[in-house]
Length: 279
Ligand SMILES: Cc1cc2nc3c(=O)[nH]c(=O)nc-3n(C[C@H](O)[C@H](O)[C@H](O)COP(=O)(O)O)c2cc1C
Figure 1 (spheres, helix red, strand yellow):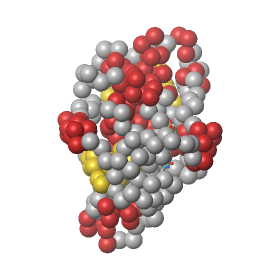
Figure 2 (cartoon, rainbow, N blue to C red):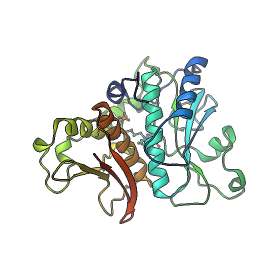
Figure 3 (cartoon, protein in one colour):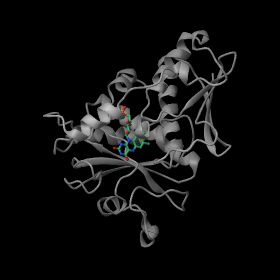
Figure 4 (cartoon, rainbow, N blue to C red):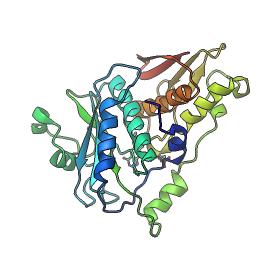
């Protein structure tokens, strides 16, 4: 799984792209993405499904930019553990796509009726009234599109206002590891390998770049937890546990890149998801 892909370069190169060429992915690249999605090995059982779709070349789906012809949706149950796993699995696909030179953007507030039209996925639930944006605020029955992403090529001729705003206010700037450690853990005292994996983790994307993950490290550096602070609420994004799964994915890749084996467990504690890595 780790194999021929430069995951570290993908973590560093990935950016949310909101300006696309109206050009379909080459068949070969789409096939590579599909094969990767089918054969992906992750360290936990799950019911997440990646579906690829063809979108209309207009602004209906993403509203603030026109969709390129291709996209992918991450479908899962809507309990917080399942959506967090969707974050982990979705990020693996996004990093793999980055490695192929494909631009992406995590998107939670896609237009729900447009997605159902281009990629019917609601089945018996389609008859119910659906939220306008995304799958809704709360847990619901059945599997939903937790987030989607465009898959295409960055159109970099001229910087549009929306890109400039993103760059200035909610850009890729990230907090240092030292600001994310719980219980006064000193970043200087972490092993170099752990520092490396946490550095990849802190670079994860999060809704509005909120970076609400916190890292708990046991004194012997053998157990690491990733979770949001108890009681955390985001003003606009209803599902921050998705982002925690994304961050956990980066951390897991960091350990793998350092040949560190670990046991991964995912649990629900005090209303949020806790990812635990035992080295
Ligand atoms: C779970 C999740 C949902 C997101 N939803 C949206 C969205 O609905 N609209 C949008 O423009 N960007 C969305 N983003 C993109 C973030 O704004 C972006 O990842 C963040 O600002 C960091 O920038 P970067 O991805 O370029 O590093 C989402 C990101 C994540 C992780």
